Image (cartoon, rainbow, N blue to C red):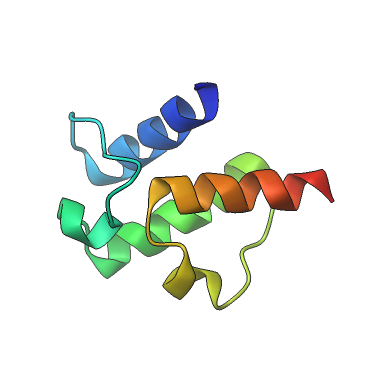
Length: 76
């Protein structure tokens, strides 16, 4: 899926890691810290021209969660 690859690339660029991230696994369980996650969300907002709700940071814990949120938000 193109979106998963795009999101993975953004996350790799932010974290300077070369491995792909598991879209089903919690971001913090993949050795990301809170600064990585916040930077990731900000990059996604810029890339997809959207704004995450303030509670999204707590609820969107996996790449799949984030992708579903982006798709749902972009349909509006």
